[in-house]
Image (cartoon, rainbow, N blue to C red; front, top):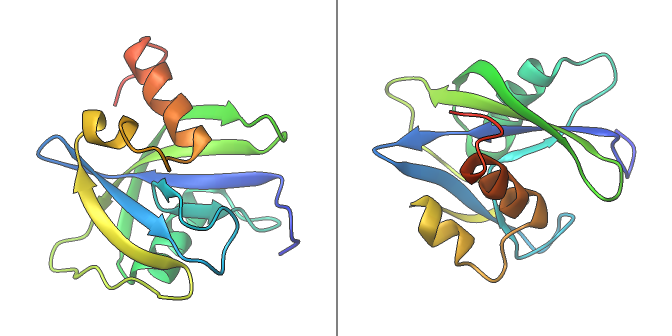
Amino acid sequence: MSDSPKRAAVAVIIDENRFLTILRSQSVRAPGQICFPGGGIETSESPEAATVREMREELGVRVNAQREIWKSVSPRGLEIHWWKTVIEEGQTITPNPNEVDSFSWLSAREIVACSNLLDSNRRFFEALENGEFSI
């Protein structure tokens, strides 16, 4: 994968009105930022497949990427595919320390209150609130 992917896939996972978020490790792009898990889409990989792969790499879990709920483009021109995703039953989240410092289950209000929230995730919640898509 190149240093600057042109497309990324993001897993939006909700359990009892709380979203699964990660704190990015110091060794990845945008270190110390809070965001949904996800990452660059490799050449010839679908956004759905990238979502599944990234969840396995970052958090050690098998998931079902159910449907794309939104697509956005970052100020840098990164095309981001946001996928409603469910962790398969019986999975234990085990963060990969090379990519993820920690994970949390947070409400939308708690997430947007974070000063270190990745800008694309802040835009996601603004678009959700504005009715641009539903989950």
